[in-house]
Image (tube, rainbow, N blue to C red; front, side, top):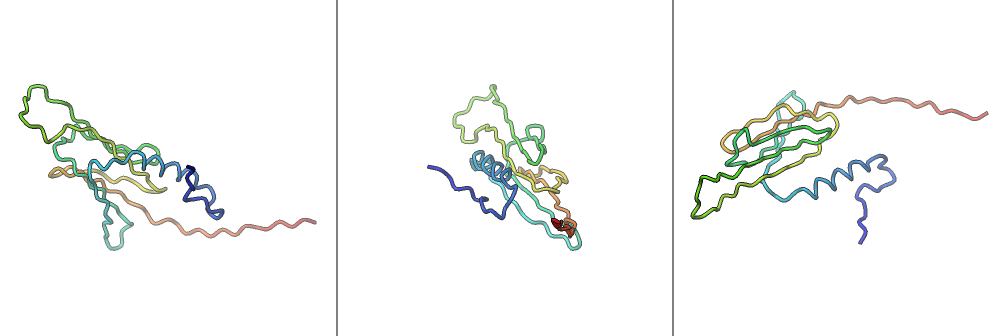
Amino acid sequence: MSRIPSLSSPFLLGFDEIERALDRVMKGSDGYPPYNVERVAEAGQPERLRITLAVAGFTREQLDVTVEEKELVIRGRQGEEPERLYLHRGIAARQFQRTFVLADGMRVLGAELKNGLLSVDLVRPEPERIVRRIAIATEE
């Protein structure tokens, strides 16, 4: 069964890379760890976003936040603790990778780990509104 591209309108030119990025992100989303994305409004400031992931049990050293080209990649790696003998193990040591595709101009301001929640703040500066007149050539 072939999939109909969502960005296939003839008025949307050059968006094939976005479609590939969306496909890549959708394939890698298994729901762990749970996360929130919120808009942080401050009067007179550019638009800010905050991504918060529930990473209980992870230390700062076990978490990695990177920007790779236009993707924000958050990884968590927990190792097994061989010296422990569990009678019941309901909290799994689980690795994860969560990827967010960033729009042009998005910048990561920083990250903070507090009470088992990893928050990553981003800013999207207001784009310049540029109108450019294109000269129309005539054939003679």
